Length: 296
Ligand SMILES: NC(=O)c1ccc[n+]([C@@H]2O[C@H](COP(=O)([O-])OP(=O)(O)OC[C@H]3O[C@@H](n4cnc5c(N)ncnc54)[C@H](OP(=O)(O)O)[C@@H]3O)[C@@H](O)[C@H]2O)c1
Image 1 (cartoon, rainbow, N blue to C red):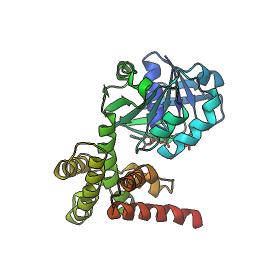
Image 2: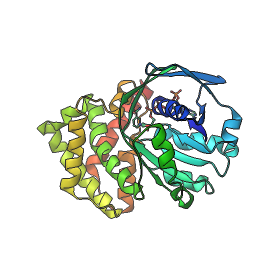
Image 3: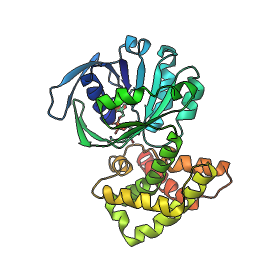
Image 4: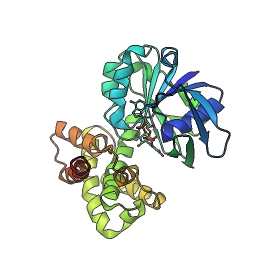
């Protein structure tokens, strides 16, 4: 397939390598204006990819969007006139809230959403490290996207394991719940995920999870407090030594994905007239931290 990676950062560069190794014709679309980008994955031989070649959008079968959530809409809108109406758009990022506007703006394109637990790190412009094996789940966001089951085999061949999930909304909501509970707290406290297993943090996490359960149930997602709390604590324990992406963004003074994590939860809660004071506190705290960089 002709595959273009929009946003070849850590995750995008990992997929670029894996898809190219699987035999696909892979191009990049980064912010860098150079015509080619040379990238090395771990200690494999560096590969050279075309970058920002207009033909790589026009002839693209699959546009894999590996931007941060807040970068997705502005980037896609700026490229709209160059994107073919048949190109499959796969959005792969943390958080929720981009898929519906993308479906509205790209009404003819198949839109698929993906969520991955692989870990990737880009120490510099030329290198990417695959820091953690994971799993990727995919599902269609519009009618045309729901007919793209075949992508499971395509992506699984490149970087297993990949599963197609007809109920991708449930997967996304469960991931959102984990992100709402872990990311802002670890960013505010500048701690590893494992710290949150300590009783003072558990006392904060429980009311956060309770609010999320009510919103998920209002959205028709089957869950309950004990199950969701157990899921959050399982992730805390399995990723005890990890620094969450939001903790890293705050550490490096980069804009976070809070609007698409707790921010998204709060906006959906409002539609159901549900109060979310605990998630709002976390949201405000992160916004205040971000504001501090702008004014300082
Ligand atoms: N990294 C992981 O291990 C991991 C794991 C699971 C999920 N995720 C999620 O995957 C998403 C991407 O994460 P990441 O770690 O790969 O982030 P990242 O390294 O920041 O990658 C985003 C890339 O997009 C580029 N970009 C920004 N705006 C652009 C535009 N308008 N046109 C073209 N390129 C643009 C950025 O360039 P600049 O650097 O120049 O801004 C950067 O190279 C996030 O939602 C993250 O939470 C990441």
